[in-house]
Length: 144
Image 1 (cartoon, rainbow, N blue to C red):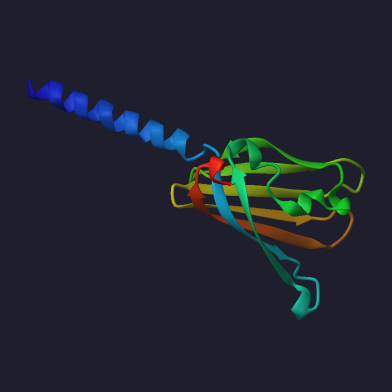
Image 2 (cartoon, helix red, strand yellow):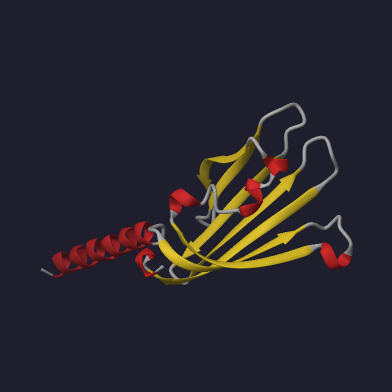
């Protein structure tokens, strides 16, 4: 009889773990802080920060970095989702053209917040920059 209790406990724990894994990627309203890092610029221009409230879920991670809307990155998209050893979602930056930019983005998602980091190397140039998106959950997306 005790064996049945252990099996039930293990099944309950697995169900909770699977529910948490899917819940953490569900769309939520976040207070986001976006930091753009451009190490090649003068000291006072290297970092810019913006803040916004936005609803984000797993399907939004490939478009959540505002820098991807800049004309210099026209034709660039994030894709080929994989997971690293820390269970972060990782995306490759693919750009059109001969001198295409390259890069990678990684998202760390927990119930207490999200952090996305995009690193880009401009094609044909010795220019690198990055953008970091950090978000604290505020509730459901309907709370906007």
